[in-house]
Length: 261
Picture (cartoon, rainbow, N blue to C red):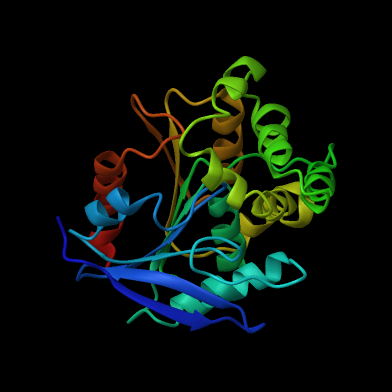
């Protein structure tokens, strides 16, 4: 196990405080996580990566130890990531998970200085449904539990019978605490960001990963992003799904990026 992480805070462009942990001693790597994730969710992953990299694991705005702002914008989240990147010793590899992969790609296209991108299962952008608007209505009405279940059933596609079984799960309060950030995720995935355009604007080494056992829509989305830039490399990880297997993905990042440092 790696040593206890250094915990710090930075101030983003709009004044929002962003909390992070720094762990390890190697080339810098920043984690950008997805829905229902704060930096505590993937501590085991950060520890695995810290054997090879200096890992910056931060709470995206609105969750964990980070602050928030009255109005949300993707540009503000890009500025948050830029503030974390300024804490690194050199341009980092940025690892994006799920919706965080789409955010990381957009940030690189917007000029945030990175030396490489690793995108794990970026979901498809959906412009056909007002997901963000419905989530916002539920949050405004104080119906956080309903927002969690709407996301799980209508957006992710988890069967209602399974969702009902998870209502009393020990992790349910944490999901409800982050429910307002589902609006942020679906703003990113609702057409504000165009991943193919972002991919075409990126010139750093980029790997796109998808688990062999993941749903077809995630395979299609990963392939579409990879095909938008001839330098991107698509990797299908044998036996994997949407959940990150720390040892598997850490070795992939080591193999793909350490020789380029």
